[in-house]
Image (cartoon, rainbow, N blue to C red; front, side):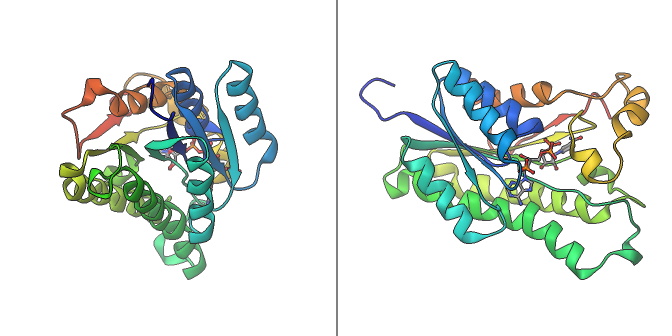
Length: 251
Ligand code: NAP
């Protein structure tokens, strides 16, 4: 990286769960990290302190990925650290278990705005900076999808599963759109991962309940998702774009 400004990774929802693990690993690999979060200041601060405490560079930016002005502000903060070369579209939400017949418009709009529109807005800002067509240095984008896109989430959260189905198509389309501009776009599809997202969907016992039924006999960890994400960004995956890695323990 000598002679060049530092490479910056933007990690949405980088304060907890999978995003936290990704932020820590990217910092270890030499990236300056601009992470976003929406409400939990203490968790975000703890990740920044963990990175800076080890000599790395990080900033946490409070903002909703579904709000355009917040996304622009996140990338402006990232620009102040160096050159954005990586985006991990990780921020995502679930909702309480419900059948489609029970889903309000407000629920559906929140789901699609956060999980889908948010990923588009962040990718837009990233591509504008990374594209060699715009004078950029190139880079990598990893979208965090879910095994739910394949399973459909019946009786639980078909809305969430459909939002991740949109992410899968978005990944394939954007990958091809920017393949000639030095940008690789890939996705990962985690299965049951031990984070707080299950509690936010009203099922704090989901990992304990469903983990033993997985083909590998357990749920995955955030770190086990972070490592393939960081690998997809690396030169070892230089010929991969539009791919979607299952990280589901065989689910
Ligand atoms: P998590 O533990 O609930 O963490 C979510 C993170 O996203 C937090 O940092 C949260 O910020 C942030 N966030 C939530 N809404 C946001 C918004 N509107 N704008 C910006 N940031 C927002 O979730 P996780 O389990 O790590 O999930 C991360 C991704 O993996 C999601 O896309 C999820 O769909 C996907 N995934 C998870 C699993 C699983 O089993 N855990 C499986 C498949 C896919 P605050 O801390 O401020 O709330």
